[in-house]
Image 1: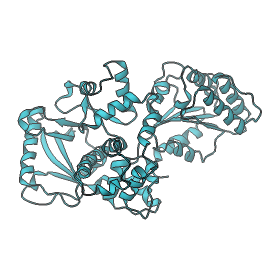
Image 2 (image 1 turned 30 degrees about the vertical axis):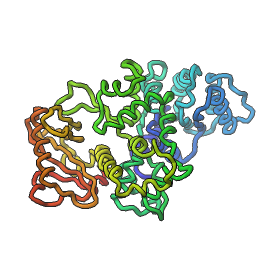
Image 3 (image 1 turned 90 degrees about the vertical axis):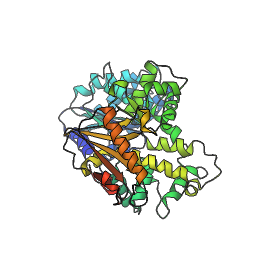
Image 4 (image 1 turned 180 degrees about the horizontal axis):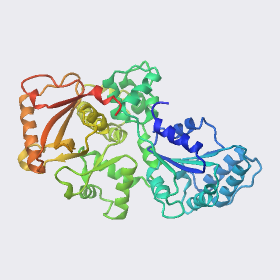
Length: 473
């Protein structure tokens, strides 16, 4: 298994514990949650079951019953509700000769249909029986991170504070994706790996779909734009699997997709007509953040004006840029966009997002991993700065230095010309003036192959290259 050492250790420690353990594993769709749990337990469980996508109450209950029949007792009586279903599970576990009885329930949120009493039954099973024993390890897993957080981790009823271990499975880093490709026998240079990350993000499943012997552009065309492409409808499947009512969430991310630096709460409300300010809207924003689609940050110097919400899910942004309005008439769409300004502009913005997702690697490359830092973005509020100056990544350090990071995705060394040099000076001046920052401002460039030395390159006080992004944090 690639990476996941900490998570594997956590799961295996639960097996060796001297009392029962409830473990919650959650994370976005396709991130490898099921694979992690199965590998940790060598695919051997006393009982395992996976919820049905789009299954109604009776379909979920009957599927659970069939799992019990196939793994324990062929002639066990069909349960009439979830309380009876978990009573059957108790009998199955009691009858097992396994010294450590492992229960793995995957896609738990799908099983909680409306008015089903499912969560109450899980609570009764764990609190009234399993937790009183010493030999149960129960792993519950789900892609609906918001449901897992609300119904399990922050449950105000019987499951409150019951999880012994919580694992939020993070997406792969560039280093881990490169390692996965190597294990699959796929040769790809690092610039192409970054390009693939711009689209797939760190969800391992998408990377396993890459075929060797073909270019990255050919792979993207096959997966997104060819007839019956595997990932052509992945966007809708993704949001439907994570959110029971995906429409308001899609409205919000559609609005955010149009603003690379993000939007305030009020700006989102203005852009999305069907939503009104209140509990539903706040819950949608919170759930998008918990699920890893959106990041919330306070702008440097403007913290009191409210948080900025920025869309950071790579697949979602690729969908709105190129897939959403695709007519199906060009099965080689991505290859035909090579050299097109739309693609190059998108790649520049997408590289900035990849850098944000690897801020730990940037700090390590700068030698400031051990320094207390605060990361944010900044947008000029002054009309006098010209074209609306902004900095996507500001690293404020406890040693009174701020790294103002500029990200550039180019095919060779990046060359700063006279007009850009002037814009950079104006940006640093505006940043210091508007934020009131009194320390040193270091212009930091994060590029594919470095900054070309010329009479303007002295403005750059520190550099990070693409190779640095591939290092472990």
